[in-house]
Length: 77
Image 1 (cartoon, rainbow, N blue to C red):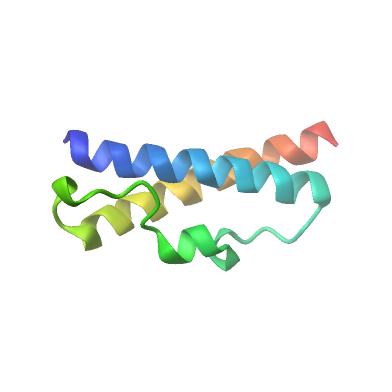
Image 2: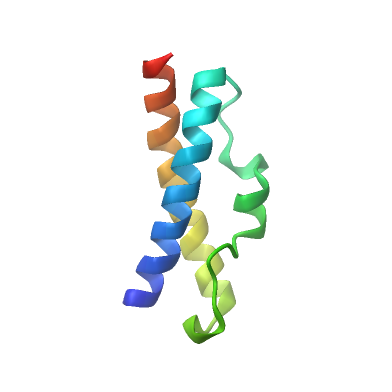
């Protein structure tokens, strides 16, 4: 539903940004070491309901965005 998509999209956007940076700097490929991935509640608001579900979707999105961003960052170096 809309709810899950918002979490995923927020995560994707943040993850891609971080991945681009890591890829460009040639840092190690690891989304999970980043604070935003670990807290996973950025963009959450109470009306979304279950926070655990939000966090899971956010992390899925972050991981996906990070993968894309990292590849792109390396390519752009």
